[in-house]
Length: 331
Image 1 (spheres, rainbow, N blue to C red):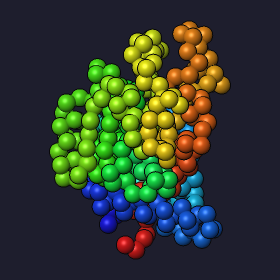
Image 2 (spheres, rainbow, N blue to C red):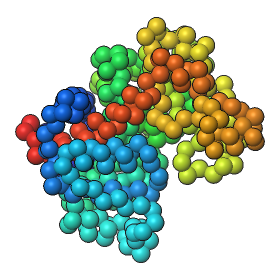
Image 3 (cartoon, rainbow, N blue to C red):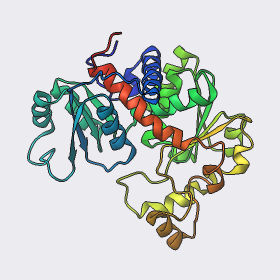
Image 4 (cartoon, one colour):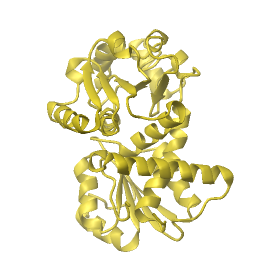
């Protein structure tokens, strides 16, 4: 069904194709848990390009490949000529001669698109400044495991609604007929072009998309409360002061969670600043006196929190993407 396809942005995938990846993820997850995994990627070679550091994405790709009998090569920001002495197009053509698939995690969407245009093998977006499709696949698998069908569920993203995870969630949610709410200050809403695109998709799928600045209105009857860090990777430290001032009222608290449905879940793509147990968290507290950022620690640690299920599901959904696009699997 998806053999030879790139995964650059969920907007390129139909609801049926997204469903196929989720169902394949469930199958592969079950096989791994039972110890009955079939090596659909046996002897495949996979290049992993990381211009931005990663824990979950790198580990998910490497473990998924190893589980499936494939080999990986990690290409970091130091140690290769990618984008420096060698163009993206030339690098893609070289790697495409050696590898069966290429993962890219870095900055501009144009970079991953340039790889896809020139590699001749499937290219997967592990994160760009514009979108994060592999994260949203893991999110959807997690929602289905906890709440059942995606269709009709109300998912609310709190904070900087312009960031890559928020945008990917908005597009993915309306693709799957969900009710997506972007909750944040107006100046941090997604741009109008993306909003119009989401509305067009929603008309076809029965989904909904709303921008809301009132946290209580947004939270009422929500099925999923979702947030991300207030400053994205690559943004300068001096952005923190402005973001904290803008977003402090959009922290997900117990009070907001209580406005959602009784079985509502809390989600976060991680890493999260919910306490002072990180260097960055301590630095923020020392400078601004804030000990919890985008989510209260009590919410993060609660039974409603499914953040570590999300993290594990990066493995199973990324494995499904690779198996579906380069694996020797019967449809």
